[in-house]
Picture 1: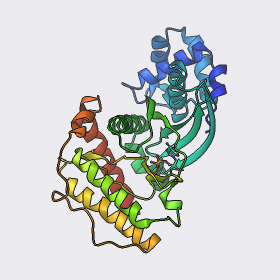
Picture 2 (picture 1 turned 180 degrees about the horizontal axis):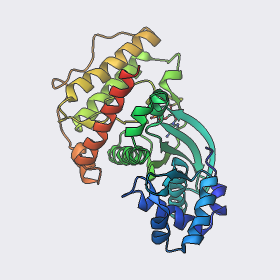
Picture 3 (picture 1 turned 45 degrees about the vertical axis):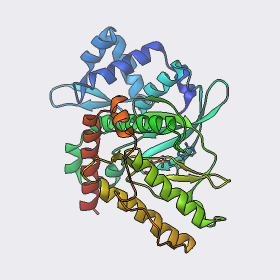
Amino acid sequence: MKLDAKVLRYMSPEDFRVLTAAEMGSKNHEVVPSAIISQIAKLRHGGSHKVLSELARRNLVAKVQHIKYDGYRLTYGGYDYLALRTFCQRNSVYSVGNQIGVGKESDIYIVANEEERQMVLKIQRLGRMSFRTIKSKRDYLKNRKSASWMYMSKLAAEKEYAFMKVLHEHGFPVPEPIDQSRHCIVMELIDAFPLRQISEVADPGKLYSTLMNLIVKLASYGLIHGDFNEFNILIRENGDAVLIDFPQMVSIDHPNAEFYFNRDVECIRVFFKRRFQYESLLYPKFRLDTEREFDLDVKVAASGFTKEKQQELEKFQEEEGQLAQELG
Ligand SMILES: Nc1ncnc2c1ncn2[C@@H]1O[C@H](COP(=O)(O)OP(=O)(O)OP(=O)(O)O)[C@@H](O)[C@H]1O
């Protein structure tokens, strides 16, 4: 589905009332009965019925035949518009431009505010991968509810925003976080290319140590990236590196911290050897080179992305990973 901010201007307050009611209802119901949607939206049954049919025609909600009753569920499309409306109301986004990226489980758009500042809108789409891999295996799909995928996408966006915020505040090279709602975040647009697309650099040794120092600095601030690779690092024209994505980031006190740390280091070593034929005997070692000086992990938890949320998301990511492996 294409995201178009103009659609927002064509949506009536009633449309949004009903859409919001569907969202609220889905907290307690997998399929929200039409009667409950009317009740929450405070509209006559006939009135909300008409609006719901129209929203369903535009794929913002989907009609579902439940065993006992007919109802609706919010779609990712509807969820996108609710988030976009929140951004518009807070004046963080005014218009939506081109889609510039499709991650494994996200969509990336260029957006702008009223002052025409260009920014990046990242929409989490957890479940998309498993949906693809599992398409033929209907049994799995029955057990995974779309509502829980949307909830997990919201957790993923909250996590990314919380980490980006503390990292940015402490001078780490990450995009400036601008806003977050539901499964979406708005951040600074970085004018750079992913390391993965770069075939030559002026001084591979210098970039290698910059990246290794970044892994070590993160650890001294209490954090392990966990997915430090050529896809998640952008390189500016002047050679500066910017970290854009940290879905696996954990505290240095995490039981698997050492494993993740070594994997991050190894990832960079392997990449530099393969891409730039650059090898060094020097690389950071966990504990020996990582002394904790700050507690950004604690700061993130205090910012609202709690340990419980982190664990919930982690459990989901593990299950998804396992499932993907099992299904090849
Ligand atoms: N702030 C940004 N500025 C410029 N480009 C960006 C920014 N954020 C993301 N991108 C572009 O979008 C692409 C995908 O972004 P990102 O890695 O955050 O998505 P993802 O879904 O987590 O990706 P994957 O899981 O496939 O690695 C990046 O490779 C980059 O080209």
